[in-house]
Length: 396
Image (cartoon, rainbow, N blue to C red; front, side, top):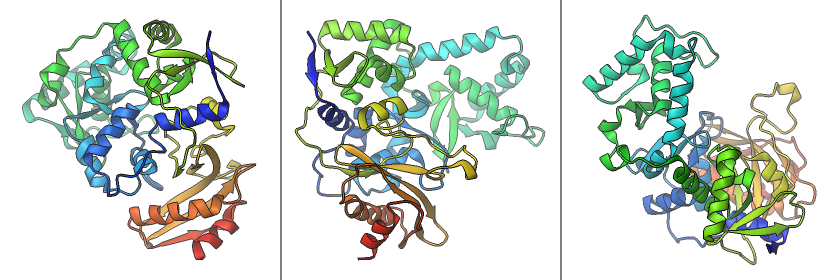
């Protein structure tokens, strides 16, 4: 018979599993803390939007506070970490890459079988790209492009060189060798990956078990849909893996009031009696990226409005959820005005039932954010029901 968890405890378990509520180390975090956090989370999602800050830096700031981004770069661009399509494009521990070979093979088979695919129309290009990397070593797409490769096509505007490299990257024929000014550097696997990673063959069913194990540990508690979504697995693969982990005792079935679907608790999950945290969450933070889970855990309905025409936006362009203790209590539309040295709060909103001290709890986090970003001032626009109390707190 499944044990039961209250919704409040489920929230605290989920946040603790994500690294919230842990005592400060007392000094600025460094590579050891970053490595432990990435191991705990399993991945950091990458996104190119930079209106406030690139997304992969934000989960680290939310959990560890102010830090030197160059130090995180040293880790994410080191041999310990690589990139691949995990949840979406993500930094992952290099040892996780062999668990995703089945995905590389699926991409390869799908595009090779489609007579109208870009690959089948451009085989000589991919062969030439592999030869270029073999001869010259790791390179960015911009270093390989020729004047004849005019940018056209989709709204991304990728050249054939970029498209070819991304095709080979999805297949695993090329891999990431870090980034330069956020532009991915491509390499042949033998140029950057250890033989232990390149040669390791993991059967598909074992890979699924291990991916679900990573996901369940990072969730603390969740449904089959939650666990599958972390690495974008299909139910036909995820459900058998969950059952096997349940049989082994790693996953414990639990019932949670208000959750319509079965849930499991990871055996190593912490069950905190309270959660103390105040943080700004990236739209691509695992706490909120699965919108159905965010609604179920926090009663928080969240949609990113970057791609919504401005007149139809409700909360703002780049809105970060606000976490206070074990609840998501607000949203801020932030912009880093680097030229003026100002952190601009373009809109600020509190959720129904947010505690009275929301603005007081949030103000120190915004000051820390300003300092972390190397800015000198914060300006709060009057838009939103949290704007007035937040501006008052920041001015006091």
